[in-house]
Image (spheres, rainbow, N blue to C red):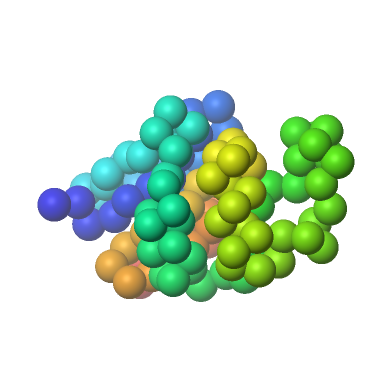
Length: 118
């Protein structure tokens, strides 16, 4: 069983950096490419239960978000974030690291080593 799970997007440099950090620390990690295998409601609920960051931070406010005419203020609650990420998995912030009962968003990059060491 893996010590860590990383919700990863290979196209994201920050996510690739987290993968490099995981390798450097020699941590056994399960890699979930959440774009190819989106999380279902139960998995999102579990992730949010463990998340140490505000739930609103789980949503990427990028050009795709803007192209959908979405407003950040509408995605601050657990349920709103879950519904959005079920419909648009690519809007999930990345990388997300999960270890035991804790999860963080791996941004900025310097959060990853601290999380791996904890």
